Amino acid sequence: MPVAAATAANKFHHYFTKSDDDGFLRCEGVKVQDVIDSVDKRPFYLYSKPQITRNFDAYHEALIGLQSIIGYAFKANNNLKILEHLRQLGCGVVLVSENELRLALRAGFDPTKCIFNGNGKLLEDLVLAAKERVFVC
Image: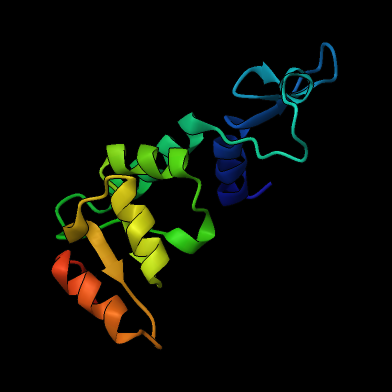
């Protein structure tokens, strides 16, 4: 296995593992079957908070010394708990709509770490972004 692939596999290994002892898939040491058995609504999404933190930390470390904003693409996942966690880590967000902007503000993001991007913006979207001091590009 090439070094880059081995390194990537090692980083992924933190998140999901399959036990050689019992054959069960685990996420951060927790048996996924136990999670499945404990939730009423299916399908569901299973996230690793420590892995999200590790991913953010890797970007943060790579950008030390540079004036930058790590902007999470809001459209990738607008789960409020994940957004709040990313905000607590110091992350900003990249937004493309008024609804995303409103949810980002609800999640407590610093408006100066919000980037309102894309074309086709309505005047009222731009006015809201300007009032909130959001960077528009």
